[in-house]
Amino acid sequence: MVAGHLREQNGYYQMVLNWKGKDGKRKSKSISTRLTVEGNKAKAEQMLLDTRQHFNPRNELENADMLFADFIDKWIHDRASAIPPALYAGYAYSLSANIQPYFLTNRIKLTELTPNELERFYCYEQEENGAGIKQLKLYHAIFTSALEYAIELKWLKENPAIKVNPCTYETILFTDFLFDWLDVVQSKIAVTTYASYVSNVEKSIIPFFDPKQLTLKQLEHRPKYIQEYYQYLLSEGLAPATVIRRHANIHSCLQYAFRLGLIKSNPADRIEKPSKDRFHTNIYNQHELQQLFLMAKDDPLELPILAAAFYGLRRSEVIGLKWSAIDFERKTICINHTVVQTTLNGHTKIIQKDGTKTASSYRTLPLVPPFEKLLCKVKETQIQNQQSFGRDYCKEYLDYVCVDPMGHLLKPNFVTQHFALLLERNSLKKIRFHDLRHSCASLLYACGIGLKDIQEWLGHSDIGTTSNIYTHLDSNSKRISANAMQASLPFL
Image (cartoon, rainbow, N blue to C red; front, top):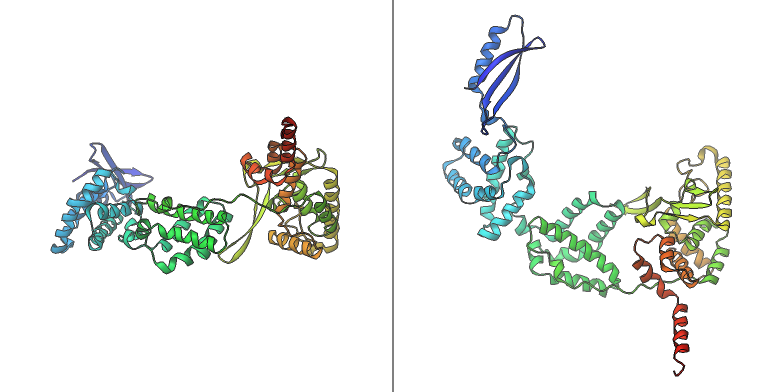
């Protein structure tokens, strides 16, 4: 029986119990009797005696250091009478032969036990001891029952075993695991990136692999299926760069399975991914840009087109341009906000973010007179529209430059679609809106601007990107080099 005494606190009796823990240190626990001091001393003393007689220190979480191997031993001894004899024999043998040795070796505490730890145990038993599905299910029954007991003792709040399928390693399909992986990465990546992952999985990866019903283990031993998938995509006309993005998704998913111990190696490491093609793009030369500017005058995209072609802004940066980012006194434009559009679960979402694609994309550019003049014109038009439409004018986007007559923010897809119509309507060469950015870089390079300066103007984080994408667009420097060599070697 543990020691104990009464104490008065705020006019009520409190029972204070004392005992020595497993670590040799004194422990104590205070329990309210809910009895007032006045006239209840005898009742409080009797309650203290009853509590001391029935109090079991083992049912207290004396410390958080109890190993799971020790707890499961306590469980089988405490619940021995409730377990049928035939079942008890199987439980006891499994504990002594497999469960306790594993968890003692890994020194896993009860309070640190997670579904992942249980999954690792099941994988270990199958790989090292050849445990079959029947044996794995027996282990799972032990864990589930033991951890329910821990919840009864209030040592745990939830049972990690109920979140685990003991036969996952054998039966989980690659296509099912893809969704588990998506759930894990969702909180770690941007919404737009997550949406592209979901699109890749649902529209491309799942349709190819689902009919094959491959488990993770089968895919580990037969990586040729991944190779066949890439060959199929290429045969369908997809660009190697697109296939490489699918590969990145598959590799990341299987790497997650590897970290969980569900597979011994990542099969995506053992295939040949396609080589990325050299970048080719359609651009406008100086004359073509002048024609475009002429045709775009007074068009809803007049300012976005000029911003993309002159400043080399991305579509997200153009739409994200704010009046507060333009300093008319210092003649500067700060690129510090973006607007993107994505589709997730069938719903289109506009995402506004105080930030750019990369840290290097955050940049300040000079405000040149033609662009300043156009901005002033746009600002004046917006003020007139606010006065004309009154309460019907949208007040949510007052700080944005690119809005429609009613004050609504221009949508990224509208920019892409309307730009294509503008080119078609005026019989101009077909290019993408993003190709205006490439045209800007090409003209800078043709004018003798160095790669480092072009990198900073466009906001590239890596000068290699600038070099790989843009330097091949202009052959003038090559002609200059050829002429220089010819002059040096007159005998040619």
